[in-house]
Image (cartoon, rainbow, N blue to C red; front, side, top):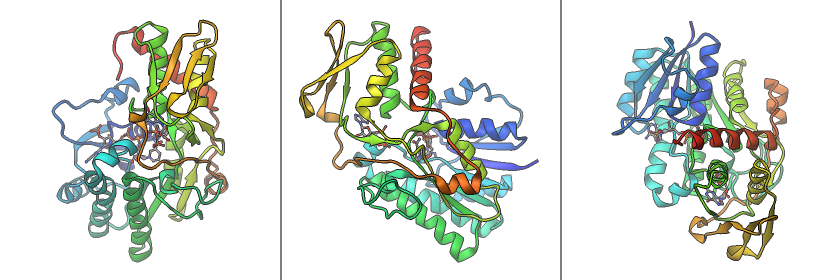
Length: 344
Ligand code: NDP
Ligand code: GDP
């Protein structure tokens, strides 16, 4: 039986990846960090929290000693490093913590692998945020990095550390540069889920208005469940490498808002510009969306659109779910959750 450690089991991607690896017959060791009230709602929603082959281990990315401990104890075949301070917005207010968790945290694992068992295969969760300021589109494995947030900077460090350990010590250390991927399990601080949750609440009369920041930003949004399959494939081939996963489609935040309201049969008409922009219900004329500059970032990533040809060719990986399908799925789930009283 193959053994895999997945860091960040309380997060979106780790929950889906754990589900996939369990289906493939793995023993999965999911790590979580100690908090006063640990929340396993994602693995609970997927119904895997009591799976006999899922073992939960306490682990903090910034604690090198616990990296040594878990790797020595578990003796894994594969490690997927999905844990991170993953929210760009918070990285501006907590840049040092972000650097330590998201940057050094990855190196702690690489160092432990190098000394304990260099045969362990390692996946690093890199991000399209590393491309940052637009230098070329669509972005692929050759596009230069120009990160625009402390999160992007920390991820560039972890990405290069991964490649450096691959080159220096011959580790099977792979970096997946994943463009934004969403799902009903996405955290509510991220814009898609913030929108779908608000649409559900507005539909049910629990919220009046949705406040957002920069709606001109364009993102290449895919479905998280398909992206974790790409991660798995990256560790099954013969050579380590760097792979972009993306849909090769891009939409503005405004487009996503319109799609989400369409899911409850509301058409939005847009009026005004910049921080005075509002979105109204086309029939009732009621204002449903306002801009609040509080959600602007000190520096923005304006446009992401990825080219996943390499993943298609080498991993036979291709995204299938359209943004409309994804958005409908998220609104539907948030309606269900809000109708049942609770949301995460
Ligand atoms: P989430 O924010 O859902 O999950 C992040 C996980 O990291 C949580 O389990 C969190 O634990 C854990 N974590 C945070 N700090 C620490 C720490 N100090 N020690 C141990 N664990 C910690 O992220 P996603 O699932 O969306 O993303 C997975 C990975 O992929 C992340 O590294 C992210 O940066 C990266 N990525 C994500 C993209 C996306 O669009 N989703 C795009 C590209 C890359 P807790 O619950 O306790 O906070
Ligand atoms: P990111 O691409 O990792 O930063 O993912 P997010 O979902 O956090 O943000 C995507 C884009 O939406 C960014 O360009 C944000 O500036 C923009 N955005 C606009 N309003 C909001 C908001 O209220 N919350 C968040 N999180 N992002 C917003």
